[in-house]
Image (cartoon, rainbow, N blue to C red; front, side, top):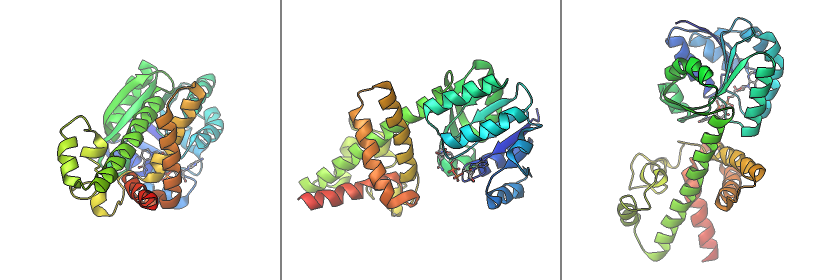
Length: 298
Ligand code: NAD
């Protein structure tokens, strides 16, 4: 069924996601504060709206892909009163779980329906329509959004009620951040013990140390030729995005009083590392910082 969609936030992720919805035959009315972002989306068939309010007026479903929770909360304040009652709001941004729950409450209070549906898979996944969506909200909302999510991705998982999609995303990325640090520390320890990268990889990748950070995104060049380490750590998954996601996880850890010492420490280490390298380096490049700092103490 062709649906009229509003898509707000047409940046690195939003633009290709909106383009895939157009390709699937949907009418997509888009808006972005940055004119160049909007122009780019128009070239792939998105209809430009002069404002977010204009974009949502005729929409059956409103999708948002914005930087952070405060952007979503601010935007919803202006667009909720402008949408038709019962419109489904799907926020694909990665934001605080607490903000996501507030967003749901405000949407429902305004007579709308809501789903949080953050993604993993990055810009490459957004372009190739191979994203994974982690959704939070009611069964009915998920069932209605699912065909759209499947146009933009290869997998959509209903994780539970409001905020559950964000919760799944930050829990997964907390595992990933901690495990990338663990793998990187092990390689630097191997170097100091005179053990080759290949030997550690050959053992650990088929033993109990096996994990995605080692066997797919291996932080040292050589053992996994496709990992970012082999192309001078070009992302991949940018260090700044890992730092952001670990910061969201740390907020939830503190709010919940969870004893997650490694998660909090990983957030600190990635915040410091990302401040130096920003978005230009894959998060596996943290191995270089660990090596440099180890050298200082040797
Ligand atoms: P981006 O900065 O490229 O895009 C965000 C867009 O939102 C920008 O074009 C900005 O102008 C627009 N915007 C902000 N406020 C707006 C408003 N009020 N009205 C209209 N437009 C507005 O960011 P991105 O890389 O596309 O990431 C978007 C979200 O996806 C973030 O929450 C990020 O954490 C998440 N994410 C990104 C990646 C990735 O690889 N880039 C991967 C997974 C998840």
